[in-house]
Image (cartoon, rainbow, N blue to C red; front, side, top):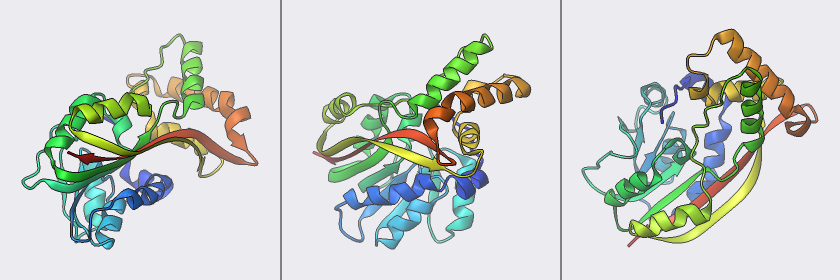
Length: 249
């Protein structure tokens, strides 16, 4: 699935995405100098962090807008435009790292097959993305708000449980040696934090919908969420994350 990204807004107002990703890097055990691919690198913030850890890095993303921002911010690093399910490396990676990307990809079997082709035997796959139930309160509220306008909410996310994902990894030549699914309520910036979150991350559901109706749906969804997600003057999204490390065998 494709999402239209506002790279500047993402960098300025949704930096929590890549800041949380810094901790996921600690799961990498490959030595300094290893070739590490940042898959779905976005604006390159985590590619830079990987570089600072002493890795030889390459950032890959399918968004031209994001890659343009990455190239502006990190001129010393290499980035390429490619899709996660069919990219091909000239030299296989010692590790592939990915943060907050896999839930945008419809076919996880095809994705993992391709990752296996691009990682050396003994190499690592370390990733984090939206787990089963991620932002469920928001999606349920949007579904209800769409229904109020006699419309159907298009849910375009691929959230997985450990039990669903681990067999796909094993089938494609990986050995899973770390896996966790956990709740991570995530604060949003400002009084319009939830509205801004919806505008950033929920795009395909609003294709071909009149702007006034879109705004009305979002406002209704925000009010449905308010009792649960607005706390002490701050908005939180009810994130659930899945984080895994697997070794190519």
